[in-house]
Amino acid sequence: MSVRRTEGRRNKRVLVAESIVKSIEELRREGAESTFNAILTQLRSKGILSNHRSLREYLDYLVTSGLLIVRSKPTRQPNIRSKQMYSVTSEGPSAEAGMKAMAFHGLNWAVPSQSSVEMRTDLEGVVRGRLDGGRLYASVEDTVVDSLARDRGKKGIELVLAYSAALLATKKVDRSYLMRRANERGIDQMMRELLDEIDYVFSSQKPRSEDLKSLFMIRKWHQSNHHYLLPRSRRPDWSLLSEDQLVDVLGKQLGMK
Image (cartoon, rainbow, N blue to C red):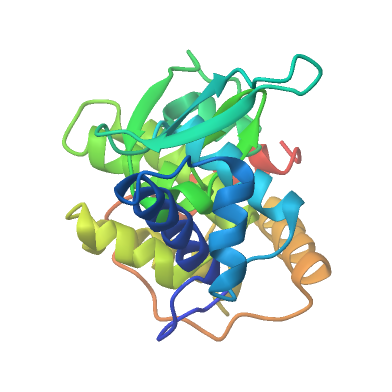
């Protein structure tokens, strides 16, 4: 599992997004037009952002999330394009989660239905998401946490656990952020157990899987893609997925089965 650790520091993109929202609100309070250029001037004066393309990207994320709305205001001169005016909504941001987001992030399974789930989020969830086709997809971490939290205690939770394990084991994951989100949704113990089970499959010295051929192929894939060995982890309680189930899940995700 590829893990980026960011303990003890805030995501810079979150700070920029916060500054953009604050700049729009400041312009409104001052009675000024919150145009693209006015926002950029505010950010430049504070040494936060100076690049046109970067601001456009942030605004696209914030508008798609529903936190901002943009409207056009005609100019007095007929040959000049309409002004784009930005304002903050009262709804708060959201992102696409559920099976559709899992498929977007590369879940290599034929899922029963690619359900669309609107997940309420915050600015960090917005900037960690991915824009595609006019949709803002929640990050891998947020998608997994939201799916497990929604289905906790339900009949189909084992299938959601399998999908989650497939993504967590094969995609880049910020474990610190993942566990923080899991704690916020009350599933931190479940998430920790699932990660322990995945780590054990990658690192156990005495595997007990019946499908050792697939297990060793999975480990070979991990070493060739991440160029490191995970430290030995203690044997988990296997309270969520068994070792054989995980080998089967990862084998399917990697196209080995």
